[in-house]
Length: 118
Image (cartoon, one colour):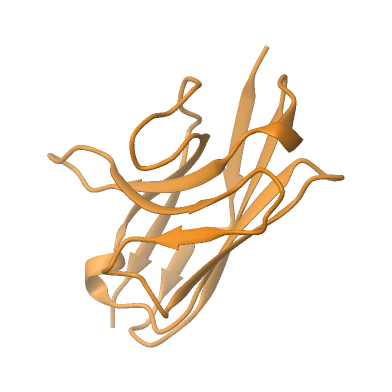
């Protein structure tokens, strides 16, 4: 059974930082690309960042480029999103999944809420 468990969200002031973590199980983590997505109430999920299966390439939405960093540890089945210089428009629930901008493979986890507010 596939499980995706996101953690690390919270409330921070503009300009602050947070690190999100995703623990994956139930599939062969090391052979799939992983991505982070985010969703605000009333809108669909938006792709944020992707990393290839071996971690040698990453890609980011323009809105987070140069502020967010995606990484993974295949021996621990985890993918991380390091977020810096957070802005109020980054406020959303963040999710991970196997996939990319164009597809996702599994059902969504519960997500982790990030709120950026002064």
